[in-house]
Image (cartoon, rainbow, N blue to C red; front, side, top):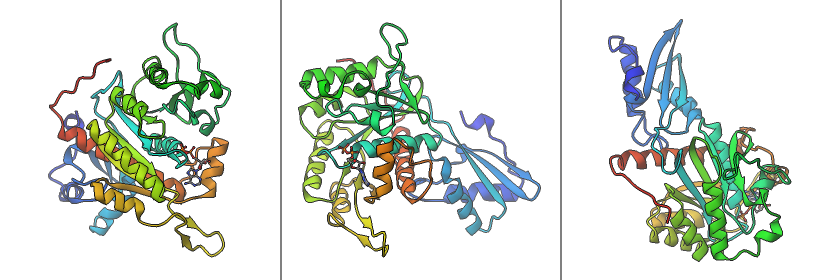
Length: 357
Ligand code: ADP
């Protein structure tokens, strides 16, 4: 797919040098470097080189890191442009990857993180959907500022997803009043999830983020078994109780052989508005220790931040701001995308078939 379009001159030593340097670059996002087959073209424009890279995962804003790296390698006057082209291997309908966002307990910021990861993946050049599977406490409509709005029907069997900030979203919260959802029992809840997933016209998606119900009981287990997911991201706070529940989450996903993409520690610390000092309100290093113990990556330590709470309450897109807070989510999203790419390239050739039952 990539090789045909590629054009750069092997005779120009500078171009060969750029390819070699990019191949030997290493970072958490590029653990194997920038592969030659991803380099679409290198052209010389006046004084500078323009490198166009087509990445099979969402990490467009890594172009700045690559430019900086090339400068340290004495290749100056280079511009790097990244395009996103995720290989068409579909896990479910026209969806390439399903990512579960889960937590052992409620109130740790799972839904907030799910929304921001979805927005960050979108910002990195991917087509993204967001499914609110938190049937008992759907909060996606409010986090996206869509309370009271309803999806339209495509036909008598399918709903159009609600669109906001470039995301395709679906939630039980768009369809029934919140008080009706809370009384559902297990089988009804998992049936509702099935319907939301199957009867939404998602279109073509690179990533579908699923905001799971909190906890590690039978409902979560059944839902996990029904979703053809590529992996799970677990959200925890540094408190002992939350960490103990996150550990149960790790055990639950391991039981059904679902890869854990990583752990995100939310509300990790608080930067004092007056003196700037970092306060670890709920304890420190709990997330990193838990991650290390289970051999899963710690994707981010996100601070307790007033802008996150206020922005979420207003249904704002806090990723668009591009500030330090947004960067936590953007970096986590890039790591997730990169890990899924590595996972699919390693399992290439193995056909996984999911059935309806
Ligand atoms: P959960 O889905 O785990 O129940 P939510 O995402 O609904 O949790 O978040 C619970 C509350 O915490 C919300 O009011 C949300 O705005 C707030 N919140 C989440 N993460 C942060 C954060 N990092 N800083 C400040 N407030 C946060």
